[in-house]
Length: 432
Image (tube, rainbow, N blue to C red):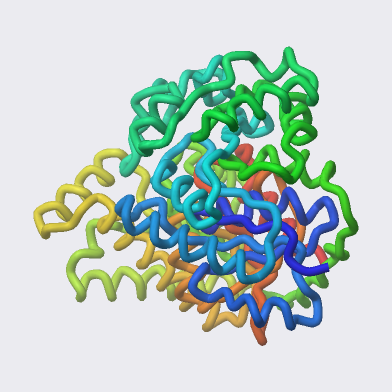
């Protein structure tokens, strides 16, 4: 069938998140770092993907850099023959949303896009243009204290207007009160004015209404949730999404590496502990000195290898104690580091541990939590592409890398998943 849907995502967990929406509907779905994607190679592949998602890893970049990455990624997807376009962003608008939306529109030579950020299955809803997280206004949710992108307003219009010179408006009517035909008529009116129109999303029914209204006629921006319904409404045939799982590595446990500071991930680590999974905490204060860093990583690697070789699962996580997190940032600042650089220092250290543990144990499965941690680990493992395999929970699938020696990975956004998710993901990776 070849590439039908071209998607640009700003981080690796978001790329997999939207990928699962198409994979479970029967589409062959591939995820690549945008620099690694070769349109001609994809066209010549024995099993050509229906959906290609390019990860720009641009959420923490300066807006101009993010713009350039998305423009480049969009052009690569154009060369691959993509015919439907989606710009996948964080489900609470963290990152360079304006620059990245603009870059896709500019690369495509169009002037209008539909924005739907709601993800009801994961507690994100938009009502009258205001965004909510599990019933709380965005500005009162845990994302207010995000260390890189603190969300201090709940108005999606205000957030996007602050990042683009294009017109930004909300529809003015709740999606729940419209038929697909009625919504389409209003979108056609908005298109005549250009820019971005933000839609309310309060339920899965709203997402289905939007999907039926937009079909394949508009550039779509926002969370992955709309794609779940869109995948079921698009015309045409699909390839088979049945990928073969990898053979189990007998007698070796599976590692979980978590770098997210979100309370959801902290709760999931606590759940692992309750289930008897050995937990190891990385002392981030020791990462600034080369000697102490080497010693800390060796301590963790040796301990984890021993546990996994004994047949038990194990988890390693960066400290999530607020006092130690603040002290880590303070030390980084005294050394001239930005908050983003300090975060990457931690993510890279976790990646070094995870890759060393997998190399020494021969394990071909891994669970990660946190977008930056997942990106660092994939980079360290040399992952240049993956196929989305199975959904575990809404927005979180397992994937199989497109490499000579494949790996099976679960890459989880820090704020996604119920308390048992990391434990469930470890059990999922044991499936034959």
